Amino acid sequence: MQETIQTSSLYSEDLAPVPPDKRTWGTWNYAALWISMSLCIPTYMLASSLIGGGMNWWQAVLTIFLGNTVVLIPMILNGHAGAKYGIPFPVFARASFGTKGANIPAMLRAIVACGWFGIQTWIGGFALYQMLRLWMPSLETLPQIFPSSFGLATGPAICFFAFWLLNMLVVFLGVESIRKLLVFKAFFLPVAALALLFWAINASHGLGPILKEPSKFSTNADFWNFFFPALTGMVGFWATLSLNIPDFTRYAKSQKAQINGQIIGLPPSMTLFAFIGVVVTSATMIIYRQTIWDPVVLAGKFNSKLLVSIAMIAVALSTLATNIAANIVSPANDFANISPKKINFKTGGLITGIIGICIFPWKLIADPGGYIFTWLVGYSSLLGPVGGIMIADYYFIRKQHLVAKDLYLHKGQYSFTNGFNYKAIIALLLGILPNIPGFLVTIKVLDINSIPAWITHLYNYAWFVGFFVSGILYLVLMPSYKTQIVEEEINETAYVAVD
Image (cartoon, rainbow, N blue to C red; front, side):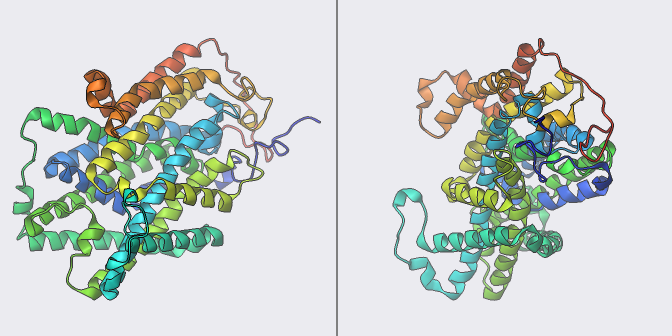
């Protein structure tokens, strides 16, 4: 029996191309999407962690603006295929990695999403802890039940796991149950951010003292040694979305809608919310004589029990909404790509939740160094090469032409060798390789003196190194491959290319 899209094990309703009549997202839908995703606690912490690392306010804000302007480029380029063919990221990856090989970039992206799920869950759980300890002081003095190497106190651990269970309950009930919370988040976080900004300005007696806080770098060399990995970290912050942006652009009315919407929504909103984080964090140095870069910790220092309780409940609800929308939906698609007929949304959500615990998120965000140099820069070294390969394949090898139905067939032109494009896998591994020594030095597995300095320093540019090394190698390895360009009519069975 001849294989068709519907009978193929590579096909499911979740991964199917979006038909043209259901592509309804316009420019302002994408702008609103980015504004909503940018207004979150990790964005605030991203900005304030730069202050904690030694930057002054304008250095931090400029670094964030530059990073988001850079990542906007692959965001728009990868978004093109989603808007043209209505396909999600794991299906798009089949064109370059093969119908089975696409599971490799999909899993790399999914594991990172699990990490973000863990971080957001820790933030929400810690917000609950900050509230409950005011009403139940004994929560702070519970006997230690975890090994000291875990770095996890009992009280915060209980709240973390309680919040994790709440997330899993929402996954079980379905995404529709979170829609009202998303609306709440859209209204609450901007108001809360502005309230925090006005508090910082008032408590510091105006913006003047805040903006006069100097950089802590004693030499230019010290600044540049921090700036470049920080810039890579800023790019890495949205490196996940720069890959799976087709999950969203597949609903675009046109290419113009996704391009203009992302330009309007991403760099400005990230920079504005980052500025608020920078100002408030700088103010904590003036007010408390210490840099507090975690807003949940900062709110816990307020005197009013009621004020802290309201703030922490709001943070927890807002984080819950963000977590389900941003960190469950995408990895669910990625896990589904492993076995589209067997793994559904609930199963993918549970897998995400379990891995999210295993990455010890409380350690990742415990200090600016761990957050930027280990987490953000580290995973950017994995995702940069994937982005370089996908963009090189789509724009230089295939000239923006795909055969949509073959992306769902085991015997189509994207099956390569038993479903794997080994040239893409080789390019991926060689793109990751230069960053491994620097990463091992950063996590203190290797001694810094055991590796030549120039090799270690490559890690400071991890996303850029991986992106260009893998992209260029892929082009070198693939010129003998002849793509089959076929223009097909759109019909109800196969939703094929549209410009």
